[in-house]
Image (tube, rainbow, N blue to C red; front, top):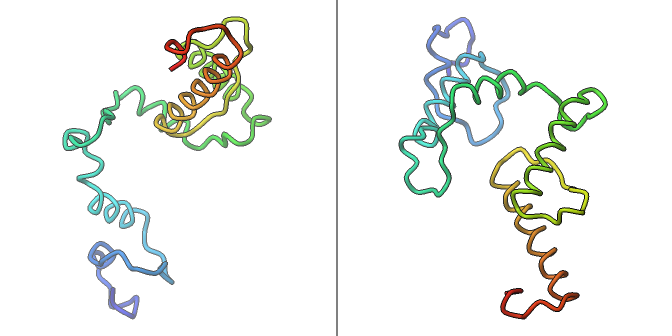
Length: 144
């Protein structure tokens, strides 16, 4: 970018490499969006994601829900009590999906990414299974 703001054209903010260090001056939100989209367009295209086991396609309705909810502070359940209730409902669904004990009260934590959520649920299931096998008369083959 030119050193002097009065020498800049309307397009100068769109024509520079992403710097190695945090920039000392800001750019417009529109230019920042264009640069990020330009840098990540192959990563963010679901049709080009052939190397992952995860489907990255998102229905438009799910994106609309995300867009409407992205400003919520998920760390502050007092301000967003319904969000906390929805979170607990999801925890109960995961408890049932992963065959949690019927008599147990589901417990867990929210995560932002689905991969993290599945890994945490899998680890919880693994450790629950290990403790169940250690204290039950189930055959060793069933516990493995």
